[in-house]
Image 1 (cartoon, rainbow, N blue to C red):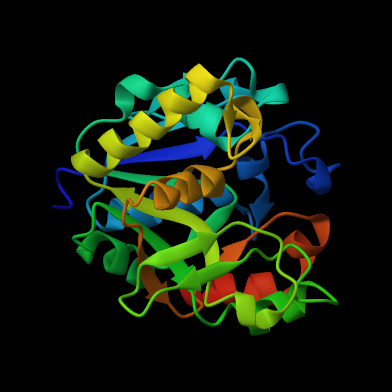
Image 2 (cartoon, rainbow, N blue to C red):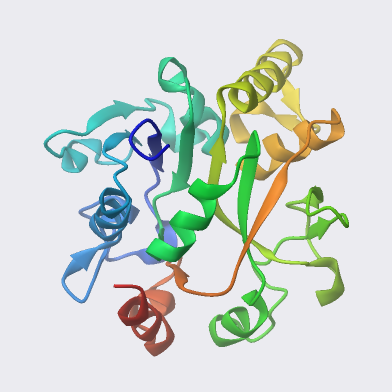
Length: 254
């Protein structure tokens, strides 16, 4: 599978919470230990033979150019969110596809687990999220999202604001895989939302990937979890970028 699969990286964001480090570069190009988040992620993808890669940029997109990687642009990046960025390159949404956020780095082990899933829609979730979130936030519920699992491992709820830890069976990471069938299903959800003007009662331009996944779940489409345990980082803030926990986790990953 790995030689046929494509990766689409959502890298349009500016990363305002990472200023001043993002004043001259996209969020995904912030460096830790002299290596940018995006270059770390590209290295992991290529280590598993995933070399058909598309980046969808926006803010300072010209800095994202890499040899052998296609660069698409969401011209409305400053006023839209992840779903709009993804569908800015709808022509690329064919076949088997990994979709990843640009502000994360994950291990080869996590990527292998995702590649090994045969679900039409597979979403990696961190079962050990709570200790990581406690190191990043005074209150672990800050910046966390609900994620509830059914007994068969499919996701029943994702992306809401949690009131308590028990509403989170694992943390959404921003890394997922779709088969051709899965892509057809989310395209159908997107175009229905485009026609109606909203997705889960918010303007389609402002929708997150979790909104798209929840809308699929609401339409009785199966969204399967791929449980992982740590071995990834998310860099959202200057504190994340400078913290020992980020550096320690990155050393374990690569």
